[in-house]
Image 1 (cartoon, rainbow, N blue to C red):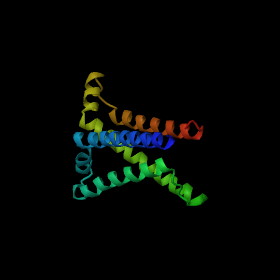
Image 2 (image 1 turned 90 degrees about the vertical axis):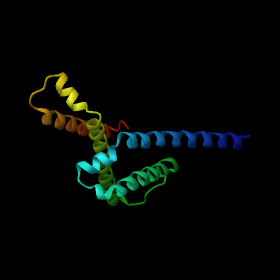
Image 3 (image 1 turned 180 degrees about the horizontal axis):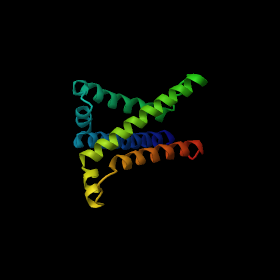
Image 4 (image 1 turned 180 degrees about the vertical axis):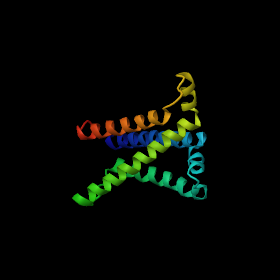
Length: 144
């Protein structure tokens, strides 16, 4: 009986994970974030690399997260790896958010509504710095 319950929970968990991942990938695809990002960075010849990086990164990240696979890198090397990994994740999330915001024309609408004449780059930098400081505080205080 316990085995049947575990199998049912496993199937439900797998289905929910596939649905969530499918939704995220569908959002990225429908909004056209990857082609837009490749166009802005003038790296459209590497579009396959972007696609495979997202697919493999999402897959391996989920596998490591679900099965709690330890990465035996040692103390110093592990810290360096986590710093590089965190930096890469931050770049990816920032790029994703900015591409989504640009695709949906969030900033032009905001600038018109608040009648902003100068200072938009400062606002964007302020948002980025605030997000970074908030993340550092979150992890430094151990709120995770």
